[in-house]
Amino acid sequence: MASSGEQQHGGGHHAGMWVFPVAERVTAEVTGRTFAFPSGYKLALGVAGILTVLGVIGFIIKLTSSGFGSPGPWGYYAGIFSFIFMATGAAPLVAVAFRFTKSHWRRPLSRVSELFALVGVVNVILFIPLMLALPPILNPAAQGTELEVRRTLWFEVPIGAPHWWDFLGLVGLAVCSLAILWLSAMPDMAQARSSATGFRRALYGLLAGSWYGSKRQWIHQKAGLAMLGAFYFMLLVFVQFVFITEYAMSMVPGWKDSVLPPMYTVMSFQTALSLILVIMFVMRRWGGYAEYIGVSPFWSASKILLGLTLLWTYHLFAFFITYWYGRLEFEQNIIRYLFTEPYLVLFLGNFLFSFVTPFLLLIWNPLRKSDWGPTLAGCFALLGAFLFNIRTFTAAFNTGDHYEFALSRVPAAVLPDFGDILIILGGLGLAALVYLLAAKLIPNMSIWEVKEGAKYQKMDTLMKADYLVLAKPE
Image (cartoon, rainbow, N blue to C red; front, side):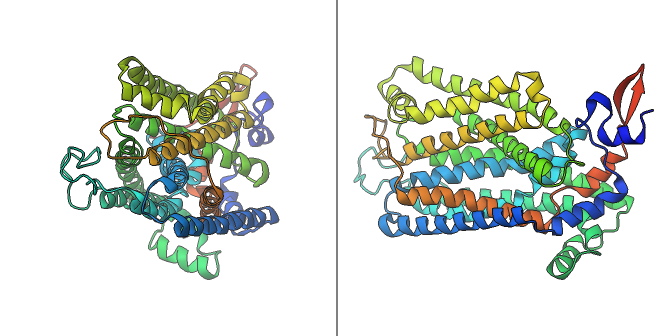
């Protein structure tokens, strides 16, 4: 058997791949880091706060100069909202999915992904201006012509559609993700409430309730997480389908595509996993969590990230080839508008950063077996998703007459103005600010899962080689 020192550090040439936390120290160490405010963290909070204020200024500029009479001025706002929703909306699903598969390596990233539930509340608020900017389904200038309605996904428009149906979907996602976070964090808050003070102590006491860790409570918690996770997955796919169809596809006359909604969902999985890898890299290198986050989560997640990268490219090809061979005039106009003419640079950047660069990085095994290789690929994937959303929604909101039967011309590209730039920075800053505050309110490491995993693993030797021995209790 390997010595305790080798077990602590991963043993031999596996050093850093697996980590072996001491279960008895996990609660005190993670709770202590949660309550601490180092200078680097304060700087990050300050920068995020400044960006948020700039975003509010940009929104006020846009509101006073353009109002909500036309959707065109809000194209960049829609793009940055979609990017934030794409990444943060799918993030809680990462913990859910890997709990379903009982992946041991997912333990350090579970809480990192679940904390995005609080950003989901922000998504609901940011969505309200888009409801006001969306043109009505009925054409106010139709005057009895055949163009009486805008082509949308609603065959028979129910009461409150499209605005309130879309809004309720986002509210449902936020409530479900908050319930997942609450159930997951309840054991940690029950342990931390004894050492917490002030507001945290009151909050932990309220949210932890009567949790004392009985077998019955653990069974109910895991069953609840499974049920909520399954519901969240179904609801997320539905809301993403409605959102990308309503706020992108239906805004471009003649754009009818069954591939875009699943491509959007696949890209959201890719983006969410990339964002979580970036956060974990920061926590491992500069956050003091190197003893809890080994290389194995990055190595394992890189394989999934590679698969999502290839899957996104397949959907892009499926969309493009259908319209390319259709050869109808309006289909060619859609390809020229979204891909080859006014937004060509954004499309090439999107393709380069969402597929080419991550693919070339992730097929190289030495990079996959490091913490910085998958993180770098994730950074490129995030940039590609940003360009995708800016291109798609800016183009969709600025097609001109949204009530046309088909796109009869190729509109010019719309460049961002000063207000748009401030809104983009502010959206990113607000999401970061909420997440940073959430990580200081609730431990950003799932204490009970890390302690559980520490008891299931050890390093051992067989014929002079080191091996990870992992128990499978379920």
